[in-house]
Length: 101
Image (tube, rainbow, N blue to C red; front, side, top):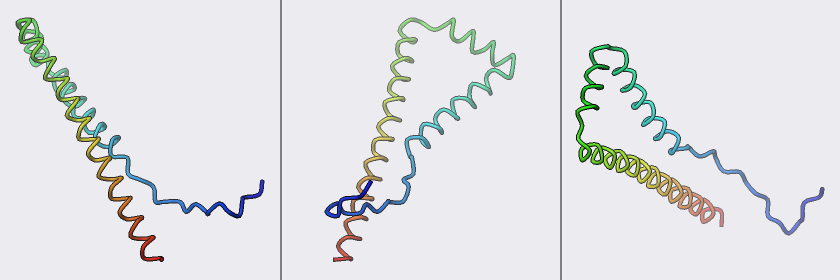
């Protein structure tokens, strides 16, 4: 297959850091560490079971809303990081093309 002469050659950019994977990975690692810390000790398991059973329905809904809010917060942080990375890449590629002209 022959490339069209009118098509400009694409120069590959440097690979991007996947901030979403880093941020979500840190959140999941922290969650796993907390779960491991709780489940290792029989005393902590019993305390968690007692606390869970003693929750009122209102408190359970409030904790559920808190968890959903935390997930939304992490998703927002990921979005901000992604936008900042794109803006930086765009400004960087713009300055390179201006310097070559």
